[in-house]
Amino acid sequence: MKALYMYEMNEVKDIEPILQEVFELEDDLTEDVKKYAMNLTNKAILFYDKLNNLINNATKNWKIERMAVIDKNILRIALVEIYLQDKVPDVVAIDEAIEIAKEYSTDDSGGFVNGILDFIVKNKEEFEKKLKD
Image (cartoon, rainbow, N blue to C red; front, side, top):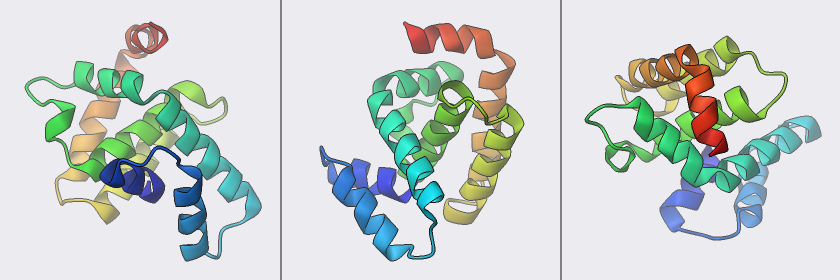
């Protein structure tokens, strides 16, 4: 989430230096955690526009441009885990996203993130088609 936040705020094209900076700041990360973080981050960037469209299609009267940068990136990461990772149960991705939102964003972000992800998962096949389009 931190790397995606820096990526979006600085409008940088190359995520690798940002990831390395985050890894240096978080010096207790295992190699497996770093690989997983790199995988999630790269997929979030690769599918950036499609993930944004999913989020926009899941919200009414609330466009992604109006959302807090942290919330958008939490949603993107959760959606990568839901749609583009094999072994992450939807409920786990949602629960982790809610906890991260509560810790790093506003008081209302946990409920906001939960509502969007819950709606997407309840309509998973419809949103999966949109992701593939």
